[in-house]
Image (cartoon, rainbow, N blue to C red; front, top):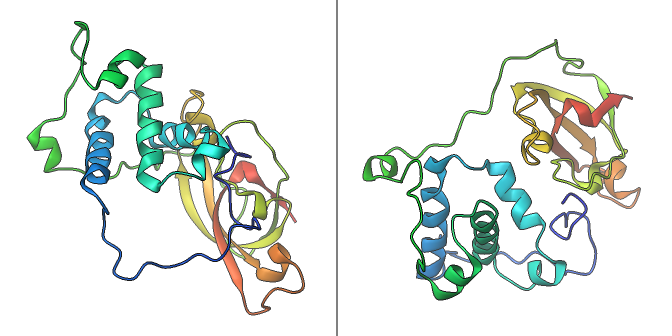
Length: 218
């Protein structure tokens, strides 16, 4: 949910971001198990990475801000497991299967563990890119009810296209079951003063990866 609590960039009241010295990859063993469970579900191909993100974004705000990073992963995974009827609420509560079910179409194997890679989301384009490096663009002031990769702080802002990154799967569509709908992707650079106002550090710039449907000519 694009306007949910997860879109925290530029929000006030949360204090400074404190960096943890020598931060481990996982703080406890259960975090590594949650990560492994999420990766192990990949071969089922029942959902995409954007659907995974959307599941976490739809958590109630009071829950989202009160739990840790991998706790959100766990609750997002539970939500998708229930949506796809892979387990019942009673089974999640019990921590084990309570009834016989058909085996999934595919399971995670040791060979899969040796070949974990991120997917390739680049696709053939249906039309030429509308923008090129150096073009001035303005982001649209959108407020969709579902997943998007355009953060609130960068909406209705003017910037410059720095690079064209190819045509890729469109997260806003695939996260809601609307298909891949490939769109051109750009790196757009904004002055800090455009995003944060005249009191911002004038030497600051911010880059975002913006899909073509987010952009209009400035």
